[in-house]
Each structure stands twice: as structure tokens, then as C-alpha cells.
Length: 167
Image (cartoon, rainbow, N blue to C red):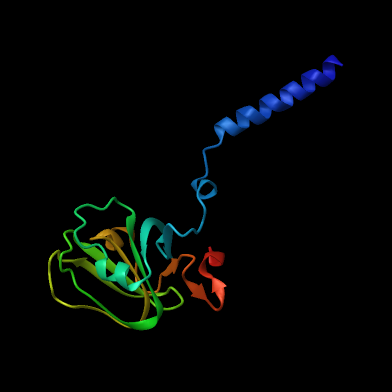
């Protein structure tokens, strides 16, 4: 009986000490894809941004105007019902932004780096844009995000599948 108790006790102790020694795996701690986050994946690796979602006309027209600070690794994801010619400006936008334009499959087609705050110059994202991710100015360059990378979010559908299944 003592041998069984001792054996079980040592087994539990071994599992406990092993669990303590192993560093936590952040990929297991966070959901891969959820409505409040967008992940950009490419040759650089992947970056996950906490987002506000702009998926109706009112939210898209407001965008990030009058926002005076945005935390690192945060942004706004603009979602359109169908691909379109996307143009933006920085009127009433107080912080520099990178604008990442993507097609219906979530593939990045154009990046406008460091849009100038309060500037009325039209920023042309190109045709066939269905998603635009706005993040802090300079962030896409610092992370290595480039044309051809992919956005992953529940709103992004690829070949009738959720873009989250590719992760």
C-alpha cells in the first residue's frame, strides 16, 4: 500500500515540477482567431492586433478620427461587403497611421506607410480592396509586414472557408 501511495505521490510531484519548468506557450494561451483581433501572417512571422471593427458606413466614416493615442499592437479593421476601390484621407485623424489594404481573400495588396495626421490628401489603396487594417504609423515596417502577407480574421473568407483555418 505504501509503495502505491509513494508511486502516485512521486508521479504527481514529477508532473508538477515538469509543468513549472516548461515556459508558457503564448500560442496556446490566446485564441488564434477571434472577432476582437486580426492576425497578419507572412514571411516575417505573424503579428496579432487588438482591433475595433468598422463594418458599417457610420463606423467606416468615423474611423480613427479624433483618436489621440492608440496602444501598440492595436488598430482598426475596415470591412466592406464586397471588393471596391478604396480611398482614405487623414482629416481629423490626430496620429500617424499605416494603412494595410487587402483583397477579398485577405491578401495584402498595398501598404501606405506613415499617413500624415490631419492631411486631406487622398490615399489610394487601389481596386478590389475589401479589408483595410489601420495600425500605428511605422509599425508595418518595424514588423516586416509586406504585400502578399495575409490578414486572418473571422470576417475574411477565402474559398468559402474561414481565414482562421489557415493558421
